[in-house]
Image (tube, rainbow, N blue to C red; front, top):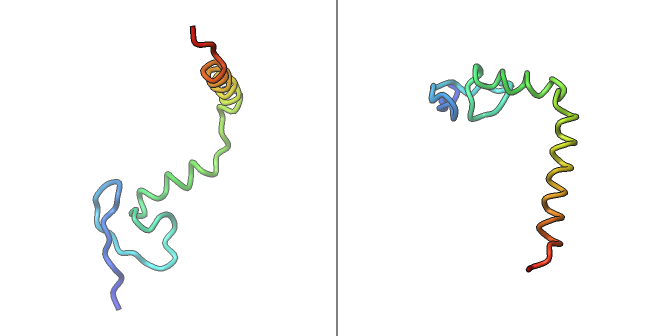
Length: 69
């Protein structure tokens, strides 16, 4: 029995979709590896995210509650 041949959504390379393949079903094994590595690393910019979220909240608050002059 042969495995179905798929085309990678990122690089366009054809690969065999084998059972138990790590990563996504529409990505080849080489394109699936960086995705799994980046998911295991903690986010280094957490403090920047807080500042960005505070700026977003302030901008939305200003847009929602501004007086139309």
